Image 1 (cartoon, rainbow, N blue to C red):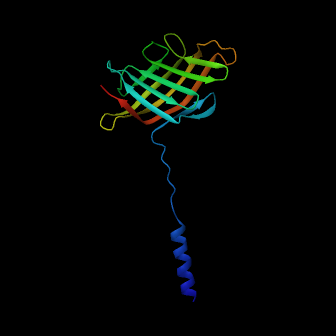
Image 2: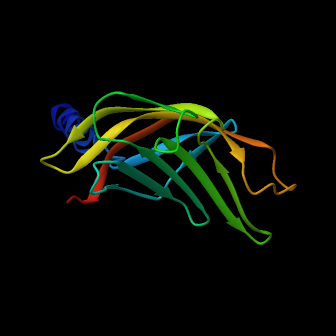
Image 3: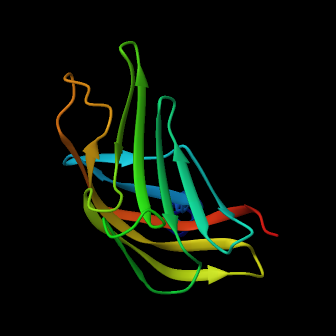
Length: 158
């Protein structure tokens, strides 16, 4: 009887063990003004000139990262209009935009992987963007740090 009970207990132990694995693939997330932020949808586009645009969305927010190519390198923000980061929030008071540009804000976008076969892009980002809407309800700058985009699908490729 003891053997059956022991066998039953071992069987229950092995049956009850399971792994609930949840993949966050693709992913676009970061820390926005010291609060965790995650997009519910993201995609990337390669333009005909080779430039890359990555867009990430929540219900009322949009983050856009732009670089001059898909090359695995660091793109510094605040140095040109071809490498930028933009955050747009639409709420009951209207739309407010924070952006980087030539001499506006700073930061970087680092492309760590461009998978041309599976059409995905991965990397990291961080930026300080200026309130270009001059909306007094929001601060003068927005800070994104510890940003990661992982296997974001490229939806069109010329």
